[in-house]
Length: 575
Image 1 (cartoon, one colour):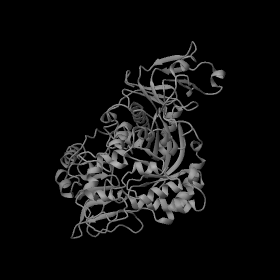
Image 2 (cartoon, rainbow, N blue to C red):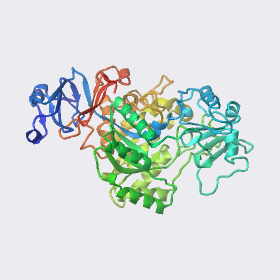
Image 3 (tube, one colour):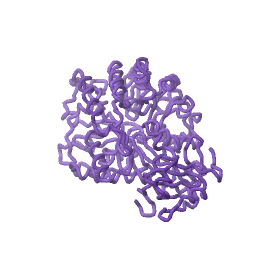
Image 4 (tube, rainbow, N blue to C red):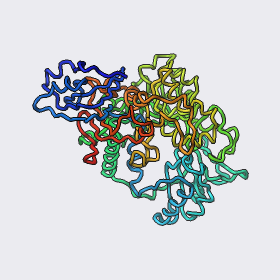
């Protein structure tokens, strides 16, 4: 960490001489630039959306003209605008469109939700609850078929948690899933059965097998636009000025375009477009060609279609992540087969073909890879492509990458693979994972220190997909909560620390959500640090993140958020 000397002033060459004095000067602060030396300065000048000077108070303030606005930071700490490497904004914005969904910590909470919904949904209709993960319930298990039958005997109940689900008897019957049912050849999924062959109600990665019919009211385009605006404002409130939508649909991309054209897009969006890996290679090739021709594939500071996303495996929160060793018989995940390793969705040759097609087309590929088996499989694909042509500059990515190994870290470094990880999962799910796998198999769970020392660039993300509210969301998107987790690595409901040797320093935690995320989204020359010439995205904090007690890091509040020098959030005005 370096503190700029009082006489040092960094200017944007030529800009002031051509355009006159800067429009905005922030001074008398502790401005953490996150440049290569982690320099701290007192003042920053902004003109036409970009940083034109950083340095000591006297030097920067001397640039002011009669029309320059000056803001006294009163000693407050300033960071670059924060970046979330993994969000699902449209789904999150619409999660509670029909009705509020209460917080749930126990099986009785879940059952009470279904009981109440039977009063709102006509008999015979479907009641679906999504993304309430079993790892985050005190009982650490699925609600059983019998429990769901008891609270909603006349409704089809669909407890969907990530790619897996627990169904009641009516939902199974309406879907045609009985003792005789077998998944059609060519379709993904797994039906769990008891000792007699009867379905238990657990269906893994089988949403396409369930005859679900929506019973909630459907939003209009205006509803979606309004709710998405509200969510983006909520992102600004926690200091986010950039996000990556890691599985964008065509309709989501169109909504971003609508907001951009209307001047209502208040975060910069990096788009990884959804690709269904179960489609034929011919169809996938056509999809990629369409994306390459899309006008938003051209670099734009606010909206950039730059990647694709597909799914290699299931989830660790639900019991279907693809592992190199068997999961083990588990009451938590309702696993009865001792040889079960989870679900892999894409065979080796096809994973290679999809990733190669993306890289050769100028798109960054990434894939949902939770288990170490999936992580190694995607590395295999990238390694095979790298033998044909170097992929380092194209920054092939792995999404989640939770269960890793020393070998995986080494190979990622050698090839130039980047990744987006979700620190909140360590805190929210660590207790259940320890119960299931034990310390030994978690030795390289989210190994931030090992990745950094190996030179692998990873970014911090939330996988936000439900509810509006930084800590209210089931996957919290408050980046300061994520930073705090990387500093302490303590799962909730425990007194222990998960691999303390993998902790980050505060400087490294800040980089995770700023310049590192900028790098994995090809934007490190434009944002991620407060340096001359870069976009003027910055936030003002209510306390000093570098000096406050470590427990206070997760409590940090943002007082002001600037996007391109424009104030998009102020705590004083409430928005």
